[in-house]
Figure 1: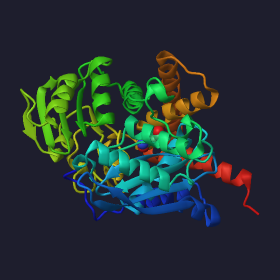
Figure 2 (figure 1 turned 30 degrees about the vertical axis):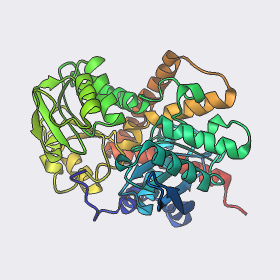
Figure 3 (figure 1 turned 90 degrees about the vertical axis):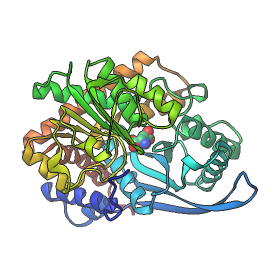
Length: 420
Ligand code: GLU
């Protein structure tokens, strides 16, 4: 993304966020150290045969951050800017995310440094299968369960499931989530991140007295999460999408953009830029659009001390992981802007991943209505739990969500005790 600053190390941000809450909860010594360190890390360098007959060596990571509460869970991303510290941060955030919605998982994450936009489907399949094979002794339905993330999807998960199953000699659907329905995927998983986000936006708007019908929405990032949030806020809550962007740039229209039409346009042309009737704007301008709800749905480090005071939204709903730096959090808090933190706002994805895994293990599948009702219950309940902590400690929502999550992880660490 245009605004991403490579100077900011996301793992340092993740560790600072832990320190803020550890100070508040007076967690010191060994427990604080455990919270601030990933448990296991695997780096793999592996060759992939390219279409022209040559081969290239790629680097990938899988980090299992904390498994006190259960098997570790987290996506795999393909992106040129993947780094070990980014994967560590994302794995830490998965740990808190699973704890905040109280699903029985620890947190993990994976990534491969590659540019999927410039790879053929065959190259992507070979890269995925080889990476899956390299990490196969590290993952499993009772150990660590990958899922889609930035630039990976249900097809990627199908290849991982197949590769892992070939090595085992039998089908293991529970090794990954976010699979196609025909392979043991769950109804509703595809749109779960965006749907979960739309529920917490609705709850926050209700509490703040903002009417969602006609509310103005700006969305940075029009991928899986951003497009679904846009569609649902538009279709189910009657909101008006006034600005949108993707990695190529942004578009705006004060009369509202039809997100379905934009999606179709992006599908055809590869970008939202040039959508008929829209005005081209920069990514930065999307973040500064006057609106009721700003949804950062792209990558980390988008909102910093540099641009936070230019944000003119009432609610910032983090569909992306790690879009806001701690300095920006403070500015938002001072300005009375409500942040719906990533570990809650985008937890709908991993929540339905948990439903998918539970269905796979039982071999018994639920209807879309059942999935969405359970998802709504989890998101609405977790929002209320977070708000209770925010009021009890007089802190902003991110710290409140961290208090909730870190307390749950610390309880698990303490009650298990230290081995041996
Ligand atoms: N990649 C998603 C996230 O960041 C989903 C992870 C999962 O379903 O395990 O939350």
